[in-house]
Image (cartoon, rainbow, N blue to C red):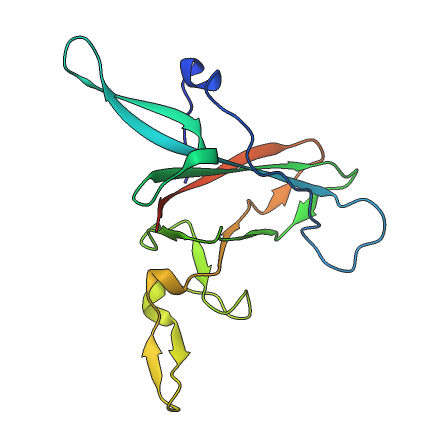
Length: 163
């Protein structure tokens, strides 16, 4: 899923979380895929004409029930094309995402297994199994295009709700 950001919204953005993690484990030297994550609270206000306006604000003071927008920026900083990559990010604690987004795969066991919510099950304390629910999601994953050329960049996003 791609999210368009209007020029007026850029001034409201504040980086809340950032990281550069290797996309492929066991690689020597600098990670070829750089990932940076930004988290914003979506605020809905009313303008002077009574129309709703959506603004992005820092997620530093997010409260239960707040709607979040999580944006993952990626860039191939290597000198070779990257193929068959998946961008994997842990879900921030205390948030629920809408698992119905077809562009996202989810994990409920820290990335050991991936799928859609209707495909994932968890063991119960008494030895049975139960269907996973959105509160069980630990990680999200997107598959990037077949080949990511050096210097190519993009943005992935999802909506979440603070618990």
